[in-house]
Length: 154
Image 1 (tube, one colour):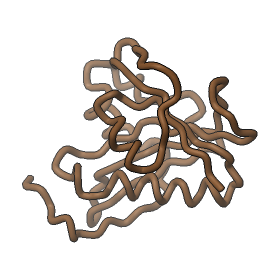
Image 2 (cartoon, rainbow, N blue to C red; image 1 turned 180 degrees about the horizontal axis):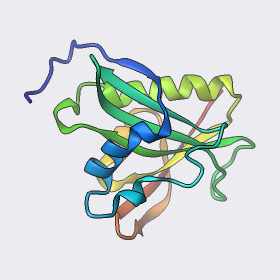
Image 3 (cartoon, rainbow, N blue to C red; image 1 turned 135 degrees about the vertical axis):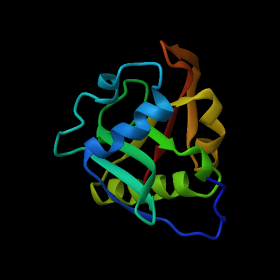
Image 4 (spheres, rainbow, N blue to C red; image 1 turned 120 degrees about the horizontal axis):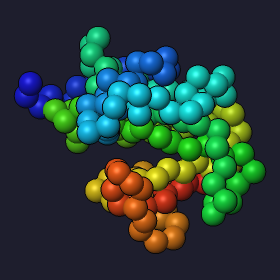
C-alpha cells in the first residue's frame, strides 16, 4: 500500500480492547506471543481504547488506563499504552489525532495528568504534542529503551 495523502481525513472513535490486538502484535510486539497483547486492566470500565480509521480500516490505536506513576504529579492520572500506527499511515496525523481525541476524553474525566513510557524512537512525536520528559532514559525488557513522558491538563 502506498502512503496516503496528508489531506486525507481519519475517523476517530472508541473501540473495544480486542480490536487493538492486531496492531499491538504486528507493530509493537511481533517477537512475543499474541497473549502479550492483552494488557492487565484492558477490560476495566474506566479505561478506554481509541482507534483511527481510514474508511473501514483500523490504522492507528492508543489505549488509556487510569494508572498513577509515582514520579509524576497529579491526583487523577491516566497512562497511554499501546500506541501504534500502521507504517503506511505514519506522518499523516493519525497518531496526533489519537492523542487529541483521547485527551478530550481525559479532560471530560477531569484528569490532571497523563503519561506514557515512550520508546526513545518516538519521544520527539510526544514532545511535539506538548509532553515533557521526566527523568533519564531506561530499558523495558524485551521492548527496548524508553523515556517517561507526561502532560498536565487544565
